[in-house]
Length: 94
Image (cartoon, rainbow, N blue to C red; front, side):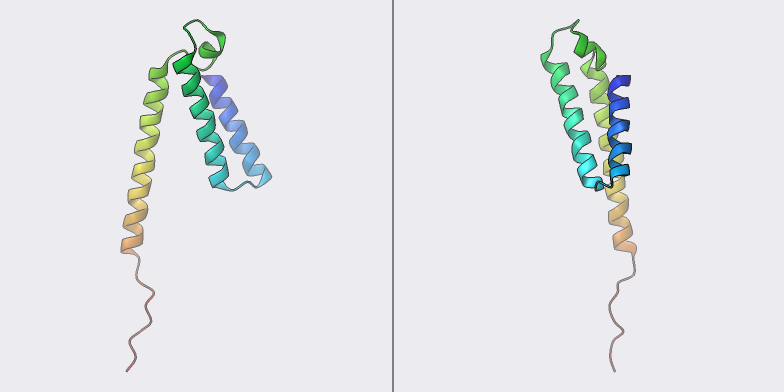
């Protein structure tokens, strides 16, 4: 599991250093996460690649749930901020 987190950190830091857009970095990290889930679902127990990526699907699903909660919270906060922001309508003309 440490290997995957290290690889994700290298991708994120390297992408920021190269100036990649945040959306592209997020897409790459989603592909990495999907690959890990694929390995966990398809490889048999005891496979070295499955063991190197955590050995259990349960841990990854808990991580996905926590990430989903954080993203949903951020989305809700952004919506509240947008609703609370004063409108930029010009003053009414007399």
